Every structure is written in structure tokens, then in C-alpha cells.
Image (cartoon, rainbow over all chains, first blue to last red; front, top):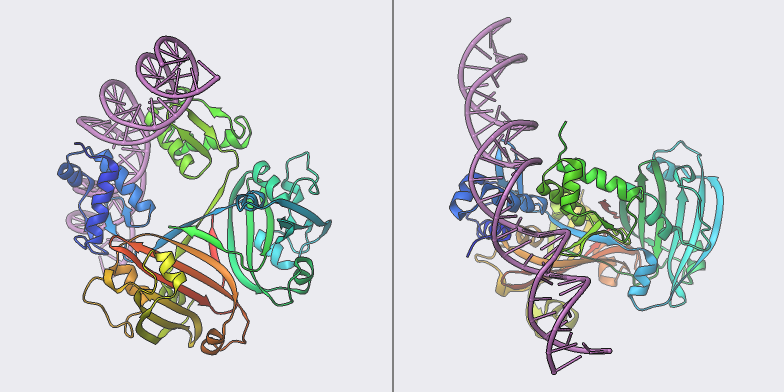
Length: 228
Length: 228
DNA sequence: TTGGCTAATATGTCTAGACATAATGCAAGT
DNA sequence: ACTTGCATTATGTCTAGACATATTAGCCAA
């Protein structure tokens, strides 16, 4: 039986877990491991590269591979298109466009996107419904300048979904907070003022520059689930 | 100038973005791309494998490589050790062990961990402080049976930190919710009852079986930040 | 028509060897 | 003492070729 890169990865991981190679320790070089396991160096490389991506080891040229001091655990979040998220829960999906106008963007928004203060942007407010009940209130500032033409009718296609398929996103960040429902949120979503809402705030940048800032206020009880 | 796998990845990505290869389309085989770019097939494979990991394409043997229908965006969360999280914010860290006792675990906990109902587990309640103020209230049920010996004194080392370095975690999940502060939370953290708190709930499994269930209630205003 | 076998094919992985690149540490010169 | 430069060395990447494996399409039989 011949060993594959996943076997090598598993065995190296086992030794790290077993503290044969404790945190901070330098592990043998690829050449040495290749000889020990009777495989080519490229195979060991594949295994160690995977472990490095997982954050278990840190690799530096010339310096070798060492066991990460604090094995930072990484979890992956798959950011869903809201429509599919809702359908995936077995509920009917619908949405209502509550606002669509040009307006000067507030300072926190322009600051995060790296745009000049007071820049006019497109403001969209969308209420996403699951099974006829409010699911997410989406508050979005959109940089019209970077959108490919023709721009769609956001009353017919949700911005959430159109952007994913039509703008090449380069980078972005997402932050979760727990906020009390604002007056507007309470009214639109039909919850008492001050209810604890899970809020996701996203900024995204595309090849053509900053694209959008969006705040998603989720209905009470919403869970954002991730695995690692 | 010779092309590397990152160049190949970038060019393939560009064509997908440019809709040369629209969502759902089959892209040319590795062999064909290798010839076009004048590189070895292994180099194209490296590039396409990376794109598949990023969720941009989907690959199946025999069926070929196709552009993902909805480019699911993935964000990565680095789950921090609370002490380092606090120190990283330039604040002093401390913690208080509020409870440490054996007790039958509640049903939701045993259910998530796959343990028998009413299983006695170790219950730990820890208040983490940042700059002397409550930062996170940690409520933990611990499966004593899978812990390596000697077990430490959790009044001296926080369970949060000790587990990371001493138990080999295999898998787990984490969920975020926004919950109103309970009576206990309000009292311990010094916030009004019902304040919106960002709550992280984690279960972790190790090689020896289920390890722990933990609920982290964060002080108001806490942000969990991720990039993609 | 349906079910299952078979051959074709694209990706997955491996080998052995080579060169590229980046960090390190030592040595030489200021 | 301090800096600069170079040799060393471990990882990063590439090539060319090979075999493994999963999946599909097509064919044949029940």
C-alpha cells in the first residue's frame, strides 16, 4: 500500500497533536519526511501546504516548517444569497423594495468605502420575506459608477442577488453585531422597539473600486452557522 | 517570461468574470489549457484546484470543470483565544472563575454533543475582563472523560485557552445569535436586563469524542469581524 | 423501457528531477 | 560596533510522464 498526500498530512497532524512536535518546534524538512515515508518530496509538500493553509503549521523559506504556537481555529462562513437561504429553509421567498433614491451617503459609509465625504450614492432599502414574514431588512448604499450596464430594475431583481452575479467582487469584509431594533426596524419588521437583532454589516470592493456597503438586520432568533 | 500557476488562476478568473465562460459553462480541459498557456498540466491543475477551493469553479472527474452557478462567497473567521483578543485591543486581560462543578448537563447540550441525556458534565462559568470591565461571559459544559491528564486548575488557566493547546480538536461548529441579556448575564456583566448581546455558541469534537459546548455572551457593542 | 455492464475520458495524484526565491547567518569591510 | 554582501539552505514552483479513479455515455440484454 502506497501513501498519498492525505496520509502524510494525517500522520504529521497526529504527531503534532501527540506533541511529538510541540507548538513552536521545527519539524523535519520536506526531504527528510519524504525519505521517511517513502514518497516524493512533492507529496510531502502538498501535505504541508495543506496544513499551512489550515493554520496548523507556519512555513518560511530557508527557516523551515514549524508548528503554529497557538493553533488558531478557522471557521468558514458561506455567505448565502438571501433568496436561496430562505428557500433552503423550506420557506417561500419574496421581497419588497421600500426605497430607491440617490442621496449623499453618511460619513461612516463613505469612510469605510474610501469615497469622498458627502458623495451621492444610490440608497436601497429592501425587506426580504420568508414565508410571508419579515426575514431581513437590507439597507444598502451602492456606488452606481462601478455598475455594469444595463442596470436592472431592483424592484424586480433583488440587489443582493444581482450584484453577486454581475459585479466581480475582489475583496470585502463582514462584521456581526447584536443591535437593538431601531424605530424604523421595529416598524418595518414588526418587532418591539429595542428587540435584539443580529446585524451583518458588509463592505465590498470590486475591480472598478468600492461597490457597496450593506447592513442586514435579521429577524429575532436568526442564527449564523459555521463549521470548522 | 514564463507563467506560474497564479497567473493561470488569474487569467481563468478574468475570463469567468468577463463572462467568456458564463456561470454553468464547461471550461476547457486541463490538457487544452496547458497547451494554450504553454505550461505543464500540473500547473493548470494547481490553478484550477485553487479556484475550486475558493468556490469559483466546480470540478468532477470525467465531467470536467464548470463555472459555479452562484459564486458563493466565503469568509474566513479566525476564532481567537479571548486573552489574545483582548490584549490585541490594547487592553489588560483578566478573568474570574465563577463556577466549577459537576452537574447533569441540560438536554440541548447533550443533544448537540451526542451524549446521553442527563450525563453528568463539568460546568464552568468564566467571566473574561478587558481593562477591568466585563468582556465575555463564558458558560461551558465540559466532557471530563476526554481530557488529557493532569487536568489543570481552571481558576489559574482559562478553559478557553487550555483546551486549545491541550485537546486535539477534530471538528466543530459555531453559531452567532443576538440574544437579550438574561437575568444572570445582566447581573454578572453589569448591563440592563434584555440588552442586545452578541452570543457565540460552539460545540467541539475531538479524537476521543465530544469535548465541550460553550456559550460566549459578549459585552454590548462587540463586533465579530471577518474578511473575504 | 429499464437496468446494468463497459469503454472512454477528465480530473486526481504521484514520481524524479530541476531551477527559483527568500531568509538566515557568517564573513568581510568600513 | 555596525553594515554589507554572499553562500547556504528550506521551501516554492515547474516539467514531463505515468497510473488511479470517478463518472458518464453508449450499448446490450432482460
